[in-house]
Length: 352
Ligand SMILES: Nc1ncnc2c1ncn2[C@@H]1O[C@H](COP(=O)(O)OP(=O)(O)OP(=O)(O)O)[C@@H](O)[C@H]1O
Ligand SMILES: [Mg+2]
Image (cartoon, rainbow, N blue to C red; front, side):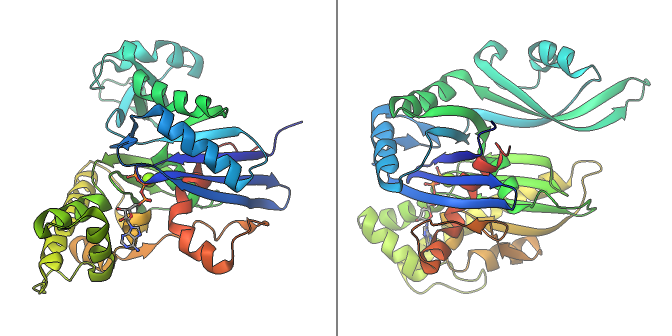
């Protein structure tokens, strides 16, 4: 019998989060959700550094949230995983997989024998010499980085069924599987504490992925640094002050620190989307959809909208899900919605 229940597990800088989904005839039900904070430094720039601290948080999470399975889909997003659009010779899938490491060694910034490789087919093309090629999104992840992630998961007695790119999870969560063909692209931007996942898709098919090592904690760090306050005080100041519009002079020193770091962040996202748009044949982006804790920064959506001249909206990853007995009130669910995007999307990757 196909197993219909799976937990999507997001190991982030600020904490571990998981969502249990049940795939049934009537659709997908969110059965449970939980999160447990991590000590500073346990996950750094999206990589598991302190295996034991992460495993301890995972054990705590399983005790608290009472998931009914230990089978998990885990996400990765850091500098040791890269996604590139590459044209490969059109071969039967089996042959292409077998020769992948040989085909792609020139395209990835790491020794191919130290990488775990995967690809998503995009389209078949014929090049100028009449050769048929397959355009793919190539994913290459450093073996050692995935190794420490799995070590933490296994040390908590969990069974990793699949490791997936966090960006693809964001895509699944924000775009219903029923999404029709589209000529306009959409940019999904998940802003975390220190990692931001950007994926541009057209009708649900990913066209472009970038993982930026930037996020909400850069802003907190700037406030702490410029005002000489603790990280906790800086976090409070950030939440209270928010990001002011580009043309407004911030009055408070915290406001100025947020304005310069937040402005740099907005600029990085804008230039990433411009880079995407400069690729030949890239479908035009029609709107931006935000998720992740960092997207809650007051004023961020407006600034991003001004900079990109695109409508910017907050994602609704729960809109396509039925709600089970999560133990959370509607109010609590609304608060966690931006954070549920990744774990739900990971669980959706194992839809049976
Ligand atoms: N209401 C809020 N306003 C502004 N920022 C917020 C708010 N809530 C959370 N944040 C910020 O969101 C960030 C954490 O986001 P999130 O929980 O998505 O990150 P993470 O998944 O733990 O980390 P990462 O994905 O970077 O590894 C922190 O920088 C935090 O300050
Ligand atoms: Mg995250």
